[in-house]
Length: 394
Image (cartoon, rainbow, N blue to C red):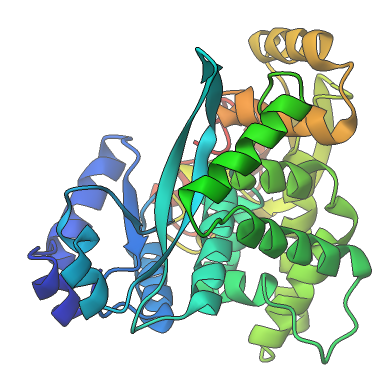
């Protein structure tokens, strides 16, 4: 939490902004990824304050940002009856993964006791944070359209606010039905996984276990809906992202909209389809170096890595091809819904789900074209251009 009263209530002290910035710069210089995990549901934290904290973490340059709903465990201070009453805490129960089975005719399952509201936020806020949790997971852990969202950040648009808009379409616009269905499906699933008590949760899980012949169903919402975004919802993604961008930043000119379109197309082309594996993803004509931008951890804006128009090629290394083909051979019998979910859940590192980028053509263009070199203007920027493919998404 970043709320001063909240920090006092949980008896903690946050790192200063300077310490965080120094740590991130050191990690960047040593090519070490930096992660932060935030908990929503602590005393004094509101939905708006959490959105502000998430946006601040994005601006600070963390490679990975995770936000979790607070859950209570036996023995912690907030789980005591007096504290629950003091903060007006309401809770629900949900399964912890599909970790349930039958042992000696007794049904065993793991669960979490989730804080769904208190005196500072209501159930709708809980669901909205669950939606933010999903989007940060998809983009920062799953690298879904990561280049586009860092472009958005470079325009001064707060990413947590963009994610909120994406997961909260208003009724005053004509949105594609598939997009509305996706958002509704996620929110409904996030609510339906909750149970008022352990008896209800256990009965539901046992019923599923018995109906499936002793096999549990996956209950991890984020990987499932991430797989939908990656593979089954692509036809509307670009249109919706561009529309939200235009709504949040009406001052953008036609050139910036064209840049956004280019990056959206680039992001879509990066995704490898494990159902239809192609060793080459072809070439894309772009005017920036994605490898150099990624090497910078997206700390500087997109335009700092501008190049003269040139092509980058997309490819899959032999080792990755072997992994993908083995997966398709083993899981190819599954229907698309299950196939892509299993791919998102089991193929690691997730860089396997994306083409490697060969930007050597851009480097040659910069060497051979004086106009391009003068357009960049910085030898430091030129030094970051790499001829070797760089993995996307780490």
